[in-house]
Image (tube, rainbow, N blue to C red):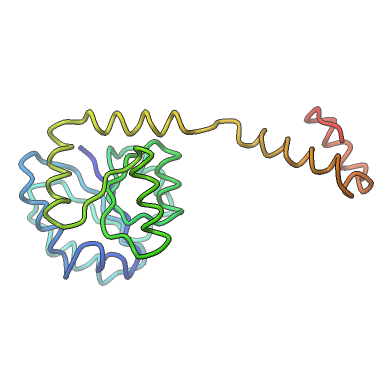
Length: 195
């Protein structure tokens, strides 16, 4: 199983407890896993994790700032993260199941509730529960497959067209109707839409 875990500079300390106790606790998982840890620009965290996890029985890859996180998501089976809006939106768009750990009060708690209710994520409230969830998913991938299916079913692949219909509808009924330029008219002809 391949797991990605993005961390921002302060988040790495928060998500993974005091120091790196949570990553060390992953050693209790019986089946070897591959773990990608993205530390962002936090060089201190990256250095600490490299040192502390150098003898891990799991294949651990610790990365700094990464421009192509979507590539890590594409090859991962699971993402362990707090439920920030951008990260979880990217994960759901890529059909990547999420294991939520440590939500911030407010918006992130709402995000976590939505993601779990929708069947896109599981949640762990403690380090012990996090390790148990990962162990269960390593032993039985059926919940991961089910979450991926739920994500696929919820996606609309026509969002660009839907947005275009809203814009065209607003333009037909509002003051934009009288401000079409020759460039706009040419573009409308190219995409076969008229105002």
